[in-house]
Length: 120
Image 1 (cartoon, rainbow, N blue to C red):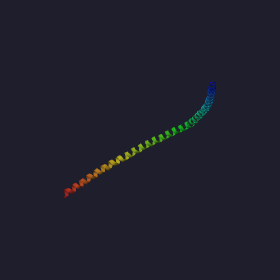
Image 2 (cartoon, rainbow, N blue to C red):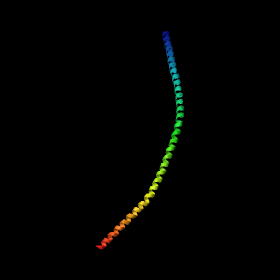
Image 3 (cartoon, one colour):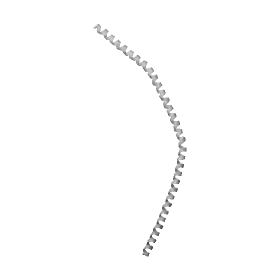
Image 4 (cartoon, helix red, strand yellow):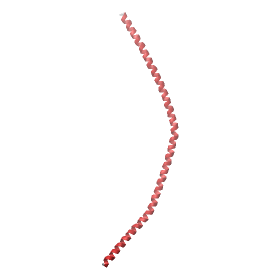
């Protein structure tokens, strides 16, 4: 019985020792992991700061370019509208004149046909 108790005591001692070694190894790896994560977050923060510093002037430039493009497009729209109005002001009288000319030609032809019908 003493022999069995001694073996049990040795087995428990070995188990506790092995458990402590495993817990120590896991703790060391966890500490290393936490340190690496800390370095990673610091690097990510630096990257974000650099990106913010680099992107801000780019965004300002893009906004300026978009405002300029919008101004050019608005100006072009206004000029196209003026051109359309000018063309309409030229075409409308011409079309009215041709319409009147067409009606008068048709009246003339019909009068001429009436004269020829009366003669026969």
